[in-house]
Image 1 (tube, one colour):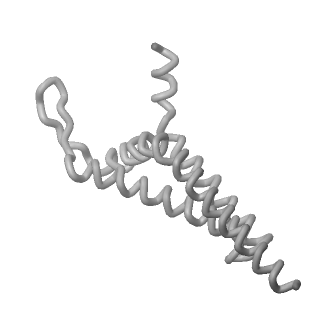
Image 2 (cartoon, helix red, strand yellow):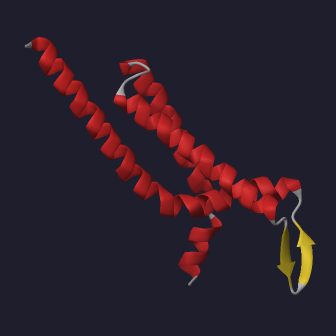
Image 3 (cartoon, rainbow, N blue to C red):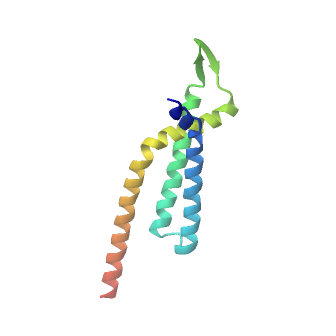
Length: 124
């Protein structure tokens, strides 16, 4: 049980770290292959997905800004909401990110296939 608590204590690091990884990957791929390459588009989509998950987490906290502490309704301060939004986004991310990787990977494969077919037709 204690191993799970350690995982949950550091869960709010997951969302910012993955966000930073995708921003760096996008910057590197944009520098090497250009703005319209499939790799850059993939990284851009993942960054947008990360932002959407953070906004969803923040909106969920703004929708109900109270929590119940021993039966008493307590208000969540604005400063704490930003941190809790990272935690909620990390929970959302655990369920959405694998499916998003598969979906965006499929789009990347389709774009690459179309580009290769166009290059083959141009060479003929």
